[in-house]
Image 1 (spheres, rainbow, N blue to C red):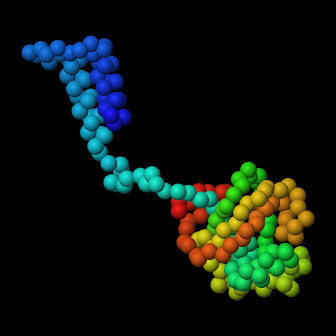
Image 2 (cartoon, rainbow, N blue to C red):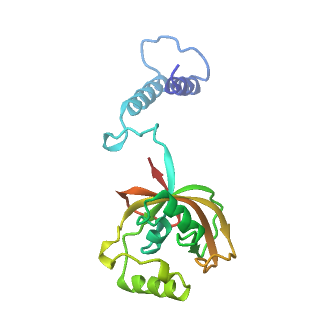
Image 3 (cartoon, rainbow, N blue to C red):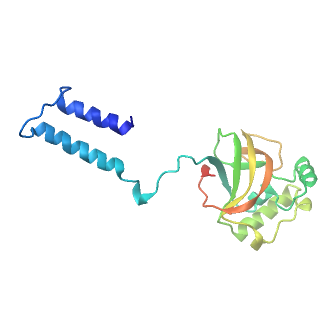
Length: 201
């Protein structure tokens, strides 16, 4: 029996105090109230959700983190498509394996890397300066400022840990998300949110 029917029967018992209603020539006020409530409840049961959109109960979800460029590019390194080159770049510390945040996270698992929509030329210059000061610059050439993908998913990683200290050149703190298994994905436009957010897939 559908749950709505059980609920309607429960309402019925409440208004009749559990007693069987006997037919009478004139409708008793309690019976009239009970009949109206059953009718209203049944009508609401038949009405679809707002905007006629039926919730998708079969949807599955993944999680994402929004990263501003060019840092998102440095995490994914879409310029390295050869598997052997990528393995060597990871071993040499040329793929960003720490994402610095001011907040701690207990999340562990797969994450989409979302390239934030906002991106300024000053941020581009600041990243170039960081690469020079950390001795990474000779080994990495950033794309031109205008060529970065913005406002969508560009790859995925696996978040191993949230660290308060690290020997990685990419770590500046106060917390560093330790990323592994960096993978390039086809660009998928998506509105980003703060912190780690859920994405329907």
